[in-house]
Amino acid sequence: MDWSAYASFLALAVLLALVPGADFTVVVRNALVGGRGRGWWCALGVTTSNVVQGAAAATGLAAVVVRVEPLFQAVRWAGIAYLAWLAVSALVSAARGSYPAQADGAPVPGAARAGWRQGFLSNITNPKVLVFYLAVLPQFLGPGTPIGVLLLYSLTHAVVGLVWLVLLVAGVARARRWLSRRPVRRALDGLTGVALLGFSVRLVTERG
Image (cartoon, rainbow, N blue to C red):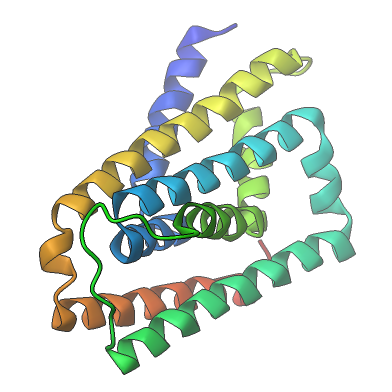
């Protein structure tokens, strides 16, 4: 185990986690819609997907997905469609501007499941996550690296992402009263929709 290489990977994982992407956008919207609880479940959904894809990369399954063109394209287009659907939902919400009042801390039926599902699906259908693991991990690991070390690296990336998303949700929850004001909420939904649509377009125009 090369701890200096691991420290370098950890620093890279932190930097990558801080770069806003589709996961950032989906988690923020869930925290805004359903509060801290739903936001945290959404973050957990993203992390669950990262663990699955990291384990797939460590065991070689990810390489199969990337190399088998029909399978890779199926995942890619599923991701495009899902992000586009989320984008349209946010834009429709912004256009309508009708938001039900919800007291802070009040339980919302199905909020946890919906949050986890959106986080998991938005991440698992993004083939660039698999490509990231396949392209980045070898830069820090030598040939013949034990699978346990591979799993440690992939789980580190997942945990770093979870910590950042949990802090992000906490920040959104603290400002939720102001963010939930109708003009602000409509603006945020509009920006979220445009951002998610942009991510889906990027997946269309990029090979992955």
